[in-house]
Image (tube, rainbow, N blue to C red; front, side):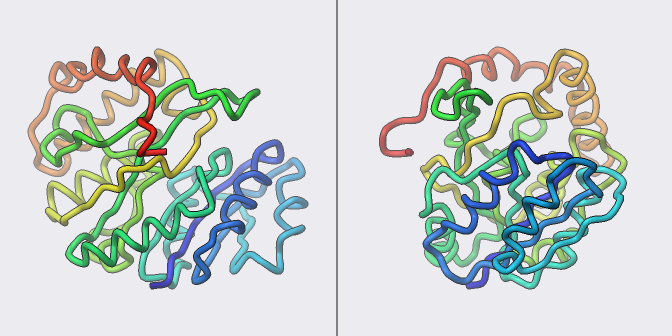
Length: 256
């Protein structure tokens, strides 16, 4: 099974080395690594070029945002399964991709496989500030704003071909809208790995304040309605008390 991993970046010089090295250190061999950069103005591409002989494909050109960059990467991918690892994230261990391959092999009917993630302090990557697990995720919960952890999600290439690429009309929630199409509209089967796959630095676009949170929830409602899935803002906001528990809960020892 060939795995394509897409990293999208823009002015990511302070973090992208960790991302690249976490991919290159994986113990699974059949990995196609693709980096799509949005014409960074800092030293991002200088760092990427240090690894040029180990990266399958590199693109650096202006884009229309993060989801446009993801679409470019998916279009370039030739693997059986595609994962997206952003330039401020990194894999929890060098067995992350092996775990994904094992799950797809054990559950061949699954078109989507995902694990858990932890958010870490940007100044101390060993300090977990939030645990984002998907143990209790069910597809119907998308109507209430719940989604699997996108950075720890892997999708069969054939599922993307049937479902289409990410919508660029959403600023924050195109990954959520993709899950709606994959799991509610197409009703593809999914499997979960009971393990943390990715560490994310806190402070991304979808987790950076009240204004972003309001936009996120409005886009969630929009994404459902566009796909003929009923929800409303009150249903989506009902998840907030449970989301706050993510800042208290930590992964169990067996999921690390």
